Image 1: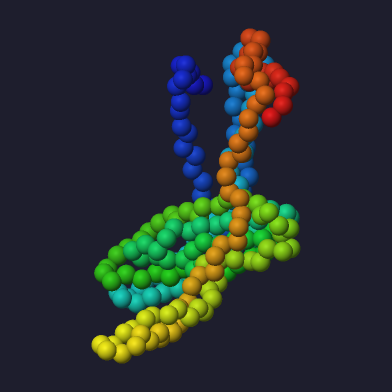
Image 2: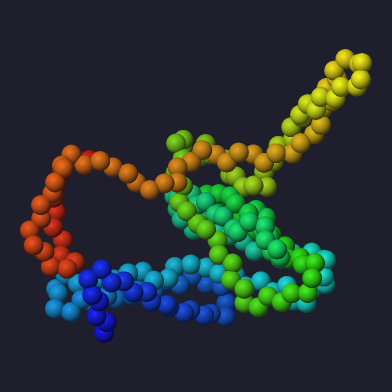
Length: 210
């Protein structure tokens, strides 16, 4: 039982632990006392996790582990983004797309130039749903490992000699396909909307044009 004052907010910390990678779904039930509209069900967990154990490592040496990311959706494309290169751990690819029903192998590299101990260090991946202007079958897979060889001119001019151009090879990351990742915005035809007095969590509808 918890009592909240007007505009008061509270946070709940929920812990979860498992000894193997798996997908977990749980529901949280919220009930408001003396309110028939106050029963709310919310999804609490839905996700995967992977445990990587590099074991004992030598200073100034790189160690790698691999794991696989899979998009189990039947139609949605997901954009993933791991934390940028830090002091000890890096990901390849660090950012990319996962099309529906596709998998991608990720390489994690651990290295340190001084003694360090990491124990149960959580690393979070940012996931977001993306939409493309063209049909999905016309959108190629992409991540920051995809690069294209380009030739760039580097002008060098010797004293008293005509200007010369020397080409040099440069590997550039392919640009991310155009996609939309944003919050929905809309405008309403009504300036003012009046609702009758309502109980908490009771639903009242007003029809208009947006």
